[in-house]
View 1 (cartoon, rainbow, N blue to C red):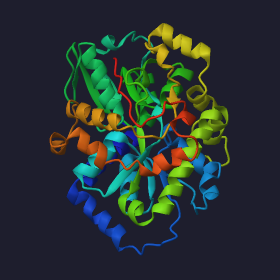
View 2: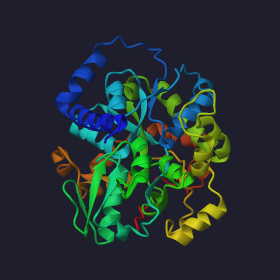
View 3: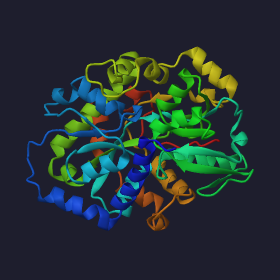
Length: 395
């Protein structure tokens, strides 16, 4: 029987599908436009309780927004993507993290006047499977859960399946060379795997770590070991704020960038800050589960290399890492891969998108560049100088 959360997830998916159309978004955009615009409007963060939200929560918890001279309210936790998108469209929150494919859908499927200003993190997701599954090829004829059609999880999973001779299907009983994709809320994935209802799932942390610690499943592949240093969630802000409140917008991005830098150097403290044990209670996750994600030991990493969960140890993937610069090559490759990814519902807008145009139109990197220049540039994050890179994808 579906749980309340999974029923909510289905409603959430239907709601988001309706929201991210031009007609569905319009009433909320009008409601936001009709509200009196306060020139001193505080930072209002909307987030989901996953590690993807880390920089925004750290910026709040460690006082980085206040250090920039900003007023900030306590971040608002939402249960689903439709809730956070609706609140953002209506102006109830003004800084959010969204799955990178959702930002593409929002701007070009519903004409949402908002832009990506930075990456929230890199990697941070995995394909987790039942303990008796030895490889991706063993998923043939079985069902794998994904959190949303427009997610990096769906994009990377379908690439993995094709590389292993399997076909993703979105309905019906899968044949031996097919894998059925099932939409499921992250909170439902661990118990569904434990009950044998699915053979695996691909999702953001810490739900992969939760399966490991509870002995329910194992990590089959890390997404960052398939697409090197890929982005997952991005920081999304209203375009009129970027245009009409540039100083405010710059300070928001400054705080988020400094929070990422702090997190890289304070991973154990970050796990505690984000956990249910902290007074802020940003997430319901235990310090143990979050530490598994944020502070993997060398022994853990070696174990993943031996199991095949990590096939590119030379990439030095940290399970989840943090750097804010939105490389254009990533956006371009994301658009190309989305065109080859099966998604349910309206996808006509994808066919008309040109990758280079999207990289320049969806993303405004001026604020994050300035923020980075103020703390030593990309080398502060262990990256080479320059604002370009080559995407590496090896399933």
